[in-house]
Image (cartoon, rainbow, N blue to C red; front, side, top):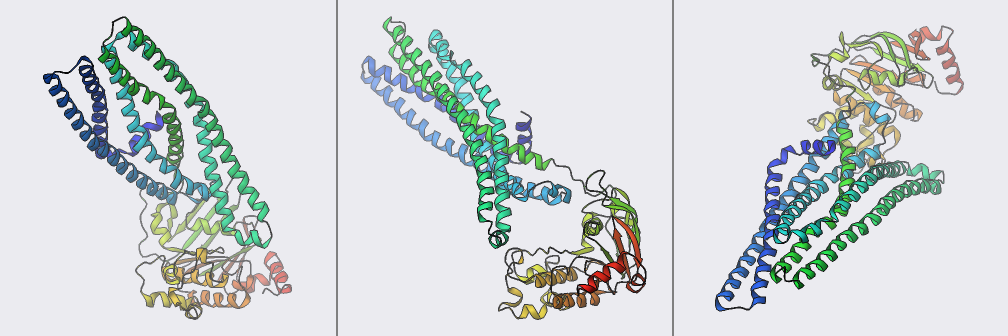
Length: 579
């Protein structure tokens, strides 16, 4: 009931369409109750023998029955179309709301959820609302009205026979309650396993080159087979319950029909029921047991729809860990000053990543962050853009706590270039102008020149209109990195964060990127995170991290002259030819 109430709340916007559809459904159910009575009356008149007057009445009844069927066509159209129109509009809105909510959630949420499962929730699970609103609820209303209406009519025809008709109903309702209790957890698990299968497929498609390169097709296929097998087992378990429940309901409804036919025949033999009443009873009996017999399918579909609705509501109700605090204001005339004041951070309680980190960055200054893998360098970059909040300490921009800055304004003023560069499946121009949809061709080309990628782009047959493919698959790693730098340049943010921007490129491409960085030096605040020390040698200040702490800081010349971690890193990289 809690889920149903929440679902009803989500559909309030379309209450007008649902109201008209519901009224049409009610009228349709009422007309369905009238038709058998007219047919029974006509049958009784024919059975008694027709006079001219009787024939005229039969013709009038037939005309009325025809008109009733014509009105029923209109009502069924309104009931079906308007319910579907409202339901599919609701599904569209929910898909956008789910996506919008996912778009607003912090990176910690994505650390704990598979993207394929989130896609399944956005597409598959929201689709169950159409099933719920366009099929299950209208059918439930129609069935309920039909059963109640037919029961009243049957009681008015013959009390004893009607009570006999209702005899199987308690057993059907009890078995339905038991079935729903058993099958719903199974459908919930089935929806989850479908999301898991989607996640595995997406993972495999994204890593297809690695799968083929290492000859792991059998292992990859086995993982898909396991996920698909889990889904199939859960589906078959639900179908097994249905296979027991459906025949049981059919038997109980058939038993009721047998009892009615037998006892009705006895009453007719005793002269206690008219032929017309027996015909009416039999016609209404079909109306009475049809919705009850369909209860099995209705309950099965209802449990599946509710399981999907629960997964959608779970996303919509997920807390936003990172959000604007009360009173947060946008940045005005940002300068790019950064300050870390005794900042600590951990992804998991008791496992610190950054510990008591403090440093200042002046506008236009380049500060480099170096250290071994896993010391918290990339985490620091995530904190600057408030993808995470520090567990202790304060981070400031232009003298204001990041939490007191409007989140959208903050991120518009911090541009990031990551090691794992993501390009969208569009043109090169679209990717460069991603953060500035109003950028002119000259703006795009200017940013590309600064990033040292303009000449490469012109070598493509379609130039800036070249499509990059999924995740930039048609470009080299260095080209993707430089396009990402061009995107950050065009953004015009006063703070630029380069997180391992040269980690996976060749020496020549690294030189291009270094030249691009140096061209930007002094024009904006730059945080450079790098393993290759050749990238950071010209930084104003280098911060050396170890175990989440700053253990050394100074210029390259100062640190090289000091015994310590930086000097050792330089020695190792010089021996490897990386500096």
